[in-house]
Image (cartoon, rainbow, N blue to C red; front, side, top):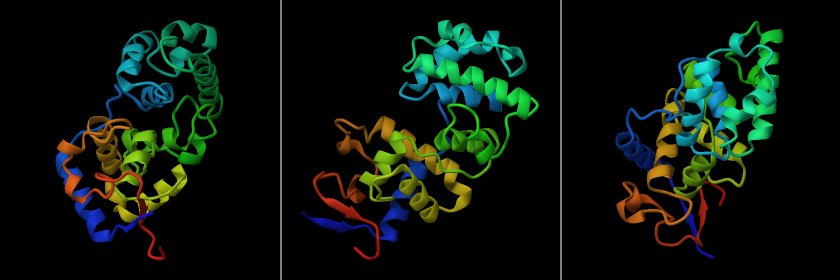
Length: 224
């Protein structure tokens, strides 16, 4: 099995190209407030942002904020979100999260990762998305696209989401964490797809260690 070492110089070159190619592109989720982003991101698990936006346009028209959702039940939410994957669990968690926000946070979405992760259904990725996009707090959210692209390009080689997040945060300046999250997401959606990636039109193709051989081992550890 061939092992390829990815240098920091190459990683920075890749990131620079991605930053230029996807400059200014943010989240595809539609929202007006931190609460709406929290709900939209929670709904986005195993679902496309396009489908989530279709659902939240109706949902937020009737329930735009925490206060309007006071007392809402999973049964009330299900008709709005039943076109999404895992809709029963999502409805249950959102209803419970609303009650937690009202009783423990005065109806305000906390700008703190630990506090966000106490809300039902809110994991580290969702918390990081909210921090970065709603509050402009540096955070690196690792979803399936970020995980795949970071590993393929050799930017952050790890078998775990936590490992990828840690290595990306070590590599990328803190001020660029939120932007880099979007570069990697959009590259994964538009080009470096899970199946049949468009390597022929990839802006970082000449620097990608995986472009010709997916069986190689990529190493970004100085000890490898």
